[in-house]
Length: 340
Image (cartoon, rainbow, N blue to C red; front, side, top):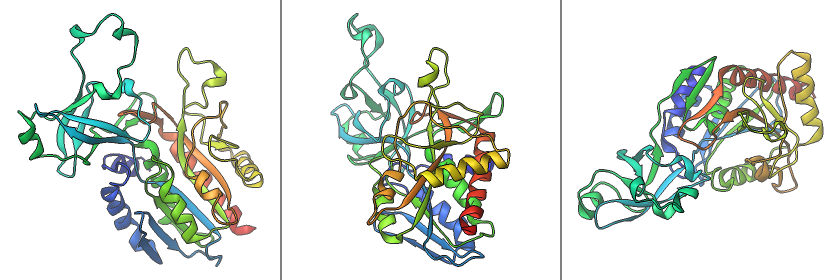
């Protein structure tokens, strides 16, 4: 599980540019798939038969894409002005390394020199329009030979194990979920399952919306990550969840309300089998469940997430044992649904 997460986090896959991630997943999934396809939105949809024939009853979903930056303009002196793709906190941008475009041109996020910052400006977070990407080009022509408006930039961040069983990487959201799906896909399944590796979640759950219409499931399990704010100074009721306390089983978030019987099923399975779990102490965020739940006549949907600190940052942090427990609980969920 850890090795797979490391491999997936190292791949670039900003929303709508998921091809490197999709190609990796497809190569790993094909030997185990009964059917496999890529739809118009770029979702990788894999169907695998299980011991019990249930057709499209169960959909498992995790998204491939990650947040990043997109080039809007090349200045006369060769710098790149940009916007964000997905929700990126401006406070984390300065000095971060990036790789721009399909050619993965190295660059760094720049901002006005500190000695030019006024006393009033020191009190505020710079506007996105004040940042730029520096790719070392001498002028507009030189930069234009390397990149173009519309190119995406991905954070250039190493995958590192550190501390007491923690991992630091970009794109833990949601390569963790992709890793769980792939591990399940490689196993014998108790029932037929459709696995959706979704595109464009970070820009509005677009891939999952189309995939759910195509698959028409009865039940969906969304495997995700969620914000952990277990940090010094954060009030307990606003910490959302904490690393090392198990996967998060959500009863509700900013975009969906869990199907109550499925929520209770996950809780019961965790308790019966001694798997640590937690729920959110502060409602925040959203995910592909919001799109899947509302498909056609509706889908019974539940979400299980890995707690992650510094979500959507160049260096996010998770506990390895939470990822392993997430896989264990997902496996038990499949057995329980198959028995229904």
